[in-house]
Image (cartoon, rainbow, N blue to C red; front, side):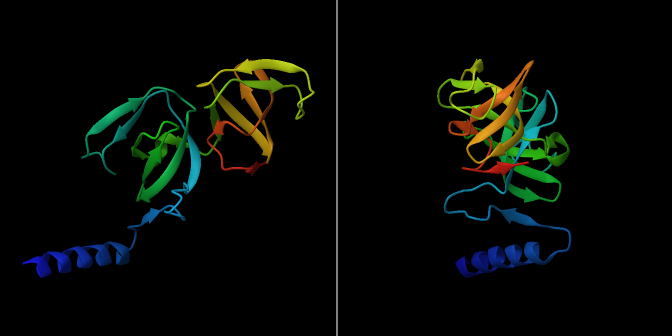
Length: 167
């Protein structure tokens, strides 16, 4: 009986891998759980489901447009995402945007007029603030938060890779 179950599991996994149009990709480096890529939420309300499809129940609803999320797996038109607090679930790809954003995670950050610690301060960004990323040079990111725009150090930002460059 146990051999039959093992064969069934192996056969099912093999068939899923061979079927055209069915892809279940995981992150490139599962040991460090690096995301495949980052994205942001496209709408004010996004249903997060227990699995990749409408037949799965809604686990919760995100109510914050532009919130950054990490895509950790893909299945057809569904994306498994993780937020900055580690919550995971599945969303339809239509609910995601390639426009990058970030969230302040550790402590308050100073938004500066230019990419320099000596540049004049524009605003203080508290933890939980979501900012739209314009570009990053590996150390500093140019961001927009409401009516404010400027540069903030990449350290303590969630939604991008360490020293990532975005143009």
